Image 1: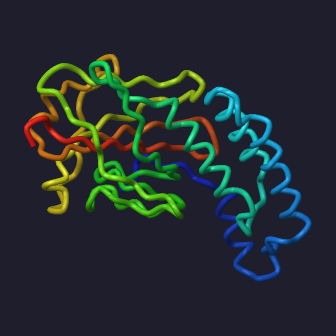
Image 2: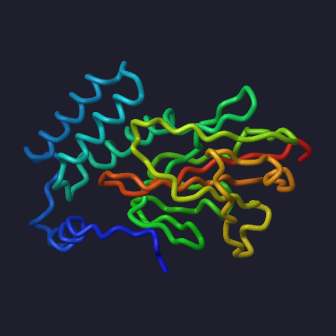
Length: 226
């Protein structure tokens, strides 16, 4: 059962409507060109701005694009939002800081498996690699020390609530073992929870008050002795 879910009535109506050819606009249509012009103008306006301002601008643009059945700009806006988010959600371990290797935008999340329902294929638990459009989720280069804490730092500009922090060993994830939820104490993760894992996956799920609803942030690490 998906207990982390949000009904997206507008999205459902758009899918129903645009099941007919008449509803979709070709990419060279005037409406699509106007959306592309708005997106390009936003990119040029914020490309040198801090990540928080980029995030705010792109989210505002996405919210204003209420009807984009031909996906003239929606996917590009979500990609831009993700790039900004990767600078606003960080794990600090010792003197090193790690951005999420991927952030999924989810309409709903399965409470047991953490499978994300959204525009991208969620193959997080299969092999540490997932294809989302043209993006490839690479294996981690993070090496965990033997002890200490991993501190989660989240920008206030995201207005995000932490639903949970989870860990799983990729060595066993193919057997159907679900991620293990760990207690949240000041958004820190004891590295002892991960040190016994050969190839650990850290997953943080956020609930956000925006049209993208949930975020599933994924980090891959290796133990120091692996």
